[in-house]
Length: 531
Image (cartoon, rainbow, N blue to C red; front, side, top):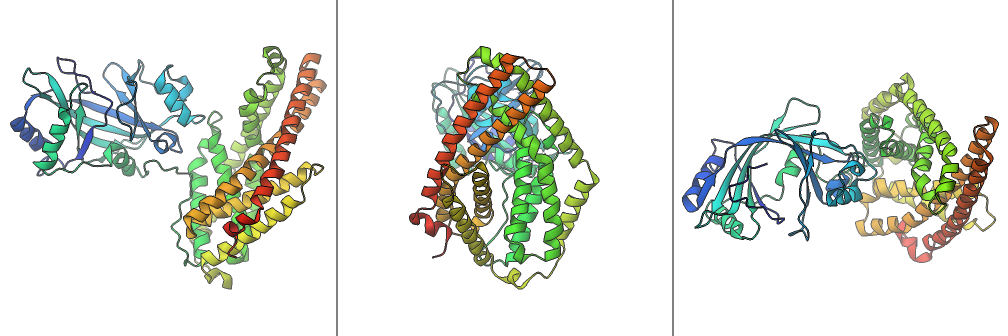
């Protein structure tokens, strides 16, 4: 960080003005701006110092999407984490840097030192791993603006930076940044900013260093890389649009496959599986716009991939839900259930080994490489392939909506859990169509449709999880009893937990029926149909 001036002036929480400058030697570069400031103000130049800062976020940019920037600043002796919330004026409580003696970044927010930074970062990032997204290396030069008694009343900082992707030695030079930093108790930064704008003709940049740095390594600020973003317009031919979406889903599969092995950040496997399921769903619901030979083989292969990764994901969710399931049961019962949790963890580890084996297999490589080739190969599809995507997608969405409405009307208090499962799958397929192709329709209508559908999906998903967890616990109890690894107290505790889960499941099933009634109400018909 910039070396403090002798009067220990303290920057405020107010956001600094930021200007992008041309490279050194160009008109209006950092040296000439500093020279003009020295002519107009009383200033004191500080020594230049190394700049080494890394932007930290989760893989899916939860901090950036939540309006925050977390920087790891490395110094000669120690490092610090700096947390900044964009768009806020002076924070109600100053947020001091969190010092890290060894310079190592904690893997998860919960491992940060206790305090406001951990609380705010954790609220956005959990349960995902913190990881570097881009590293800026270079030089920082400071210029203190002084008043009549030589107190620092504002600070101007020039940063010359090269951006590096994580683990890459080769970097990309960024335009220098000039920051006008306010000092607590003074408002002279406004005078300095006005001088830069009115006298030097500089224009503040809304980009700051985050957006430009991320762009330099191929990322977009505040954008989840696991969200498909095909560029579609309503008149695009259906086959072209479907291929564009499938390419996006394959991109997500490939960028998440390495993280699938991360047993602590379970969202990698989730994102991977969502992209696989969405691919299968499109191949089923929009198969009429693709060549038959393209659909049949790959639909079966993606089904295999979904089945290979499903058990690990189910166990991830169960173990993640475990503390909430045991809430209010007391520490004694929790101790009695420890053998069951240990068994589930062993099962999860074995399931994850099977996932790793599947992703390292020749079958998986043939699938993703062959699929990539098929999606780029020009093929003349069925006649419907030339119909515009808005027509084809609208018909598919209406069909899916009718299917959800029909399946839900069969539900009553006596319906088997399999009927709820069928409805959950149908609702999921409808949601995928809206998520992937809703962009070609009215955005307000699409947003309303998602809102209506989300509650139904949530209650159905929770009811499904409860049924699966109860069944799995019965299997766990049987295995522990057969292996004589559980005493009577553990088996009784498992039975009590099953009762709790089944009670919750019954309530969720009732909630699913109510949510379906709201979904199927005639006022929502126009959200999913063209009539």
